[in-house]
Amino acid sequence: MTTKDQLLLYLKKNQGNWVSGELISNNLAVSRSAIWKHIRKLKEEGYVIESAPKKGYLLSKDSDPISADEISEGLCTKIFEKKNIIYLKETDSTNTRAKELAAQGAPEGTLVIAEKQTKGRGRRGRSWFSQPGGGIYCSLILRPIMQPGETPRITLMTAVVLAETLISLMKLKLRIKWPNDILINGKKLAGILTEISTEMDAVNYIVVGLGMNVNTLFENFPREIKKSATSILIETGNRVHRIKLIQEYLKLYEQYYDMFKKNNFEPIMNRWRALADIIGKQIRVDVIGKTHIGKVIDVDNDGVLILKDDQGRLQTIFSGDVTLARF
Ligand code: BTN
Image (cartoon, rainbow, N blue to C red):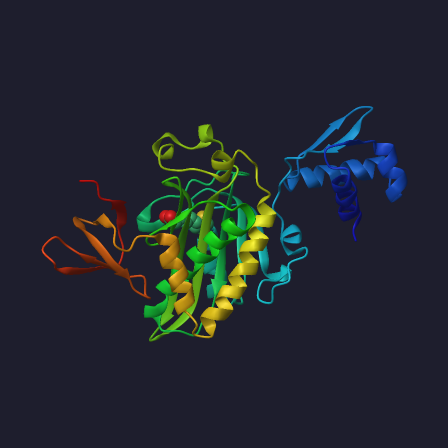
């Protein structure tokens, strides 16, 4: 273990309390100036550490930095391993970075995660608000053996994994909104952006991007999304440890992905249907240049929405923005 790691461990054991430089120096057998140097490094990595003369150092209780080390600590997954976790303090978009890495041959299970995105991308050409420290912005590289037409299933599965992660850790009352949003109290908490590279009739790689508002305060959301977005902090009043969330997400991801690879998609889809609670509902779907209104008959295993309009005609819709119709 490096001196920096030892120092971090020491501060973590005393998290929320002041520890004197002298005590640390004696315990770790390093000079006070070396401690100061490592403290500066830890701060650069995102740890919130206060320092004061005569008091020493204090690792704040709200300190919640993301690092590959912290994510991999205690993570018992097969495809997600430390050497394939790429942490970036700042990037344009983790999906863009992950696509570049995938094109260069990065293995399945590679995770690109950033504290801050300057050009976070959403579905349908939208941008994704990515406040540093407030959320989780990450992209997974997968290399499943499947037909390109089946890839929407990965997005459906990811929405289930995400919902189950939030339910298992926080018992959140949430809903999946077709095709891939996670809503709480009608507001958007998280979204998924899946991008693929295909060749003839095979998939080269899939990049599954996840954006989630975790510890974002209401006042920090931009005005345009204040009414439609929410965060776990806003909904529960509690700050959430992002590392725990990411670890649970990766753990469940592997379980569901194993099921998926064994062609056991039906139970995943059934769970999606239960969490979405959209079948039988009267909805409006805005597709570019067109609006469909009707009753949802089903969402099939490829994520296609099947709608019956008021004249009894069936419509199949591949993508769009859904709102529950009010008459
Ligand atoms: C949506 O609901 O429109 C999808 C949002 C997906 C945002 C995430 S943040 C991490 C990853 N990188 C991006 O540029 N986009 C996705």
